[in-house]
Amino acid sequence: MTSTSQAHTVSETVQKATLAKKAAPKLGLLTTEQKNKALLQMADALTAEAQSIIAANGEDLQRGRENGTSDALLDRLALNRQRIEEMADGLRQVTFLTDPIGETLESFERPNGLQIRKIRVPLGVVGMIYEARPNVTVDAAGLCLKTGNAVVLRGSSSALSSNKRIVEVLHGALAKTDVPVDALQLIVDPSRSSVDEMMKLNGLIDVIIPRGGAALINNVVKNASVPVIETGAGICHTYIDESAQLDMALQIAINAKVQRPSVCNSMETLLIHRAFAERHLAMIADQFVQQRVELRGDANTRKLVPAIHEASAQDWDTEYNDYILNVRVVDGLNEALEHIRLHSTMHSECIVTEDAANAARFLQEVDAAAVYHNASTRFTDGFEFGFGAEIGISTQKLHARGPMGLPELTSIKYCIKGSGQIRD
Image 1: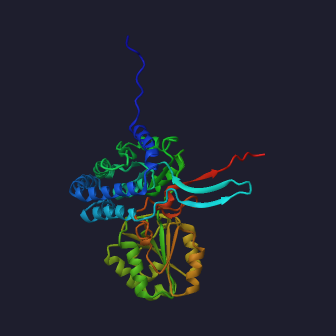
Image 2: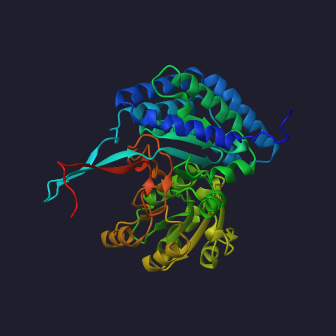
Image 3: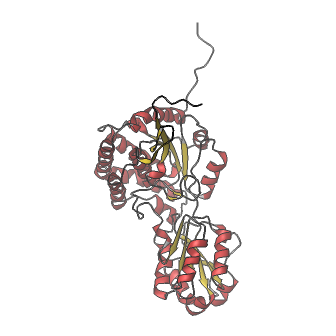
């Protein structure tokens, strides 16, 4: 007799999260040497398979062009041999970093003789939801595996071919090591339902890290029941003070916007002291135009350079990730600080000045994950901070803030040794 009940179909998301959950305990027990050998094997495999990864990436780029994706976002998606080598080098650099797992953060003895030790332990299973950039696949895999965390990745459909090939290559490498292959999972279902389901997998996923634009991050923060480490959108400002050196100010501003406009630490708004602007704004604007940057300014800016487009109220709160820049002329540091307070996403902010007092005020008063004096915001990056790769840049204040390297992918555990103590 045939049963009328239908077998329950388990989704890809649940299947892969379950595999990661089962692999996590074994992964958490591996030695630093075992994990480092796996990372080196992964790095070598990426280099060896660079051509096949580039071919898969070409499929994503072609779909992007057909769908009208902007040049800046295509650049964010694109892989070439140099970028793949950089991804592999990031994995190799992680092997030189201190393994935080098992580190004793604090130890002490209570009056009753209890010996208490506070140590770092893996988070467990990390879920990554991210957009467009296939290098995140490698960064997340490397950092999570080094810290004993299994990882479930869900990239965007725009990078699906690239991500699938990269994970195939990494799985092939892990099969030759002591790291369980199942500790690295990629969700290939491109539908919105896979994201919605992943955000609710309490008991299978321990924490979710969203990485992408404001819409993605807000969706995860508002709808996830799994704990979230929020990586923020980057509406980053550079303020050129009256005393700034012209050459330095120009180089920092151009670098912050143009070096790679599609990333979250690129500058979206340039604030300029009125006296400095009256002397130099026309030349600065011309330099940006030569770099194909569209400028949008307030009334004071447009009085000095009428060719600049008028900025809307919405522009000051927009992360362009493109060759578009807002410009505002301000009367001084107070007005610059107020503008940043109103429009910053607390990612990365910069002051260019020779005035030590103004620099000190800016560094102290600006509430952001990274605050710069006389340096480009483009340095807010795990690699540039010496963390190897990074899993994201946190703009929240609990658990982690700024570029998240190895220590930020751990939790803590108290180990208590006694000699028969009982509580009265």
